[in-house]
Image (cartoon, rainbow, N blue to C red; front, side, top):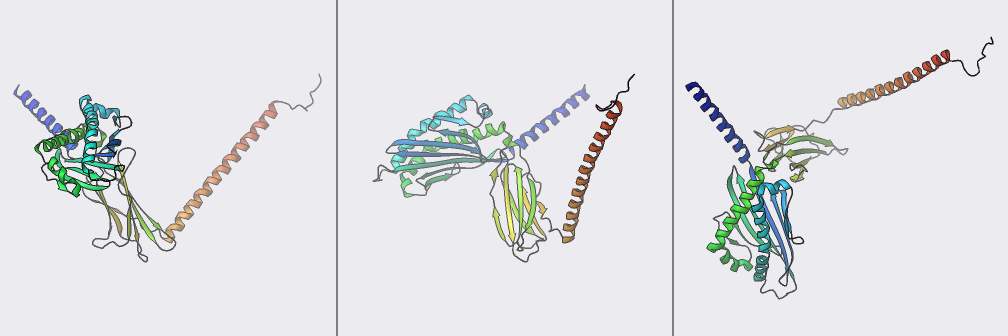
Length: 357
């Protein structure tokens, strides 16, 4: 009995360890949730209202004034959010349309051109790392100019444009401070956690890296380093020469771009100065799913001897394939001739004389 109890306690301990490990794997990644709103108003008439929501730069939901519906990317996202939260977001976006109109009217009271269109831009975001909130941001802009922003739940509003001075006193009131913190918790953090809880977004993937070089007739040498299929999108690629040698040359980057499978892609290139042989270079890749920054050497330029070997190998392969094709055709032709001869031996031709009885 005591032995069985010890075994059960040991088994329970292992189960607990496995569960904690699984939760840690899900929660350790760094994630960012962004919501961006664009509102266009003319003479207190709402002309347009567009909203997009992204997690780690991956689009998951949007709102368009034309249909007055907040739409999600896939059905499983609605299931992850639940009916109550989905309806809350829908009503929230609709209810705020009138508030946005009032806000724009308040900011443009002294505008003499009453027929002018005004565009309000709002951005909210929050970041999590290991389930712990790192930061949050609320930022407002009008007609392409920054107005006011606040970083952190307990931060201070910073006025970026004189137009927003009066709004600062409203935003700092206890009521709106409480509303802002609730919105951050409910619609930024909780929404992100629910979606990540049922999404492949939480499955972190290391990058696949490809390094190549291109030698031009004028002596220019260019290197390429491509990382693809990785998640999360945060990644660092840089060139290295030797151990401590500085790298000189013309660098360019594609920037981090999304793939169709919700992973990411980035490519950097380096054009080295004329006269540099291009030896000793490597691409260093640092990503959260790599234990340490990994070094990928740039391939050396093939020597003329190697080029001749490659050319001869290709030529030999072509000759062998040609011989095989010719032999196959000859064999088929020979087989057809043999069959025809055998048939003629069994059956007399139309011109053959049949002996009389």
